[in-house]
Image (tube, rainbow, N blue to C red):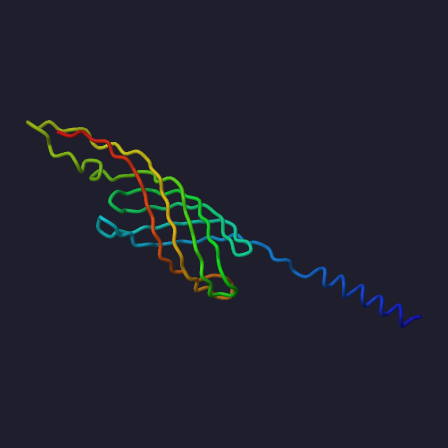
Amino acid sequence: MKKFGLIILWVIIGASIHAQQKKQKGAVSVSAQTALLNGDNHVNGQVMLSAGYEFKGWFIGAGSGFDYYKYRTVPVFADVKKYFGKGNRQLFIYGNAGSDIAWPTENQKNLRNGGGWWGWSPSPGIFKNGIYTDIGFGYTLFNSKHRGFFTAIGYSTKTITEIYDES
């Protein structure tokens, strides 16, 4: 009878240990990004920072940054990534969508001011915010603590409106 009680005790202990195994939890994730932007204008840089929550191969967050492609702007966006595979080397796809806030330099505001007739100077350009989108795919180069680098190729669009006087 004593043997039977010990077997039941070991089964109960084993079942409770199995039930206490670590469950997969999500994690807060922050990423800093730099990019080269190229299109119908010359190549310029972009710097972004996004933060969010990563769980079961998905990352959902928000981010912001600034870029100097044609006009200086500040994209503010929702960020979604899907990682494929296990381990530290994973493929991923991503998509960002949000607002592109115009923040032109003084030179960019006055870019179209040619002086006008007889010294008349038109008013500087007025900029209105637009839309920012970005999609692409990439590959992670993480270490064992899920820190490291990732590289990606993507396609982004941004729209802003400029209103200016034409002489």
